[in-house]
Length: 414
View 1 (cartoon, rainbow, N blue to C red):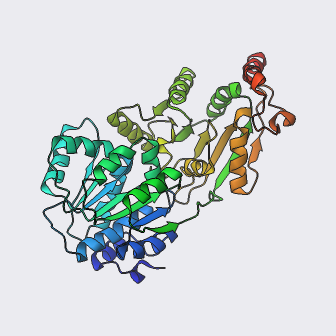
View 2: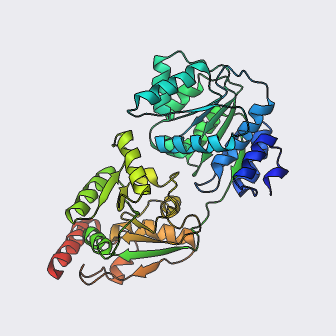
């Protein structure tokens, strides 16, 4: 379907024309008409499907045609992170080029000038507020913000916001809004908590389910079977094999793992920087800017950058820890092979990771190619060990032995 087949305003269509957007993605085709009709919507769609445009385009059209008070806030878009809020604000700027609406991004950081801009937007009545929950709550506690004109309440990456503990903040914001406002929720997954929140805030929502797409064929997926203690030696060995190392993302499951792994790579003279939620917002922003500009060779990250961050020329993604579900795997490796580029995704699979890795292969409906473990790293687990029916590789009493065996084999191979 083409955008001009939808009931979008001329100003919105003119902006799409200038940006060379003509064909809808599935989530846009299914969601835009429902939002234009005024229904509450809950849409399950992953990053990279065009979901941001799926709510911005009908929002701008409705603002143009509906009666609203231009001196008040008219729409609130919630996002889990500063990075995503900035990205939404940038897209809003492009899509609203030919329509007379203002937006302000409200997020945390150390920029005092940004605080003033955000305060003005909230208190003087920007048309659209794009905010992280914590920052908006902070503003609400300081200033008397008038929410009486809000007609649209949009939650982007709702599952991620709940994972980050923002449920109470979201509900506090919701209770300040007119009950008649249209509620729109986008989520990559649909756990029980999301359905609970939807039931609490929505009225007969229309559900739009877009199946999680499998990774494109332009991503060469590979896996290495090894012991837990062999992961870091393999990572160092692989990264130091490149003549020119640039724009590699290494995903780890926990913040402490990210910190430890970054130090381990730096000790081997590999240019690595961490990215996790404990870092100050300005540090995270500076790190991402340097990574985009090629000033950081390796970004070691939690899933905070698995969604919503656009860096087109990442050649390699490494899963140091196997993601716990297939959708997170798709989001992670989807950071490579963007904008018609190709890329490689390597997953390090220890015996403890086996059951999660099997779920991923089941979702993909194929077996991921295995890379041999370099002899310098030591002996890999046997097929019998890896095929343990329990999916744990080792019995509870022998896991320590398996991890230590990997360390011992690596030391003996030096």
